[in-house]
Length: 176
Image (cartoon, rainbow, N blue to C red; front, top):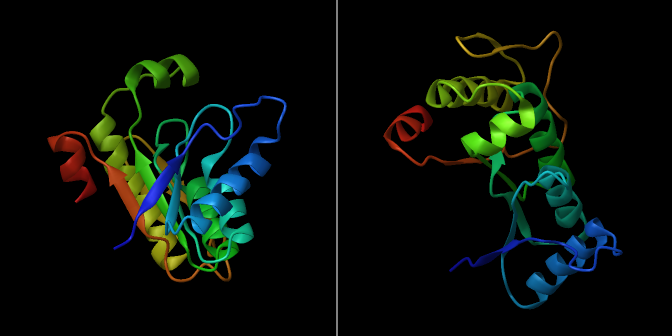
């Protein structure tokens, strides 16, 4: 059986280095026999980057995000980050995505949170193309993604697994 833990916040002592604290927690989780650590995205640390560092520093531990909100992100950049994390961890990275919360998204990014299921479907379509083929040429209703050059990251094998927090029938349908 595979058992993991969600890590957050990383540094209760705000004078401590948050990344070092996260790595220490990852080491403690591995020493306790846990198989994975999961990092939520906040407005402070970047969970994809911290996952890559933990996975690089703690041999054998699986790492993943739980979850990175799609609003405020572009699939080309997320694919690049996820493939880099996959390469850094030797194939032990899982990307967790979700829609996030309307109130936080609109307040933080200033744009409307309209048509979230459409946005999620289009984001996943573009992202999956990049992760599977290293390229995308997608023009949708809510986003455009086109790679002007190859977007594959050497060493990012196997293909990055993607999990989606689909909290409703339309989001679940978009995910499928």
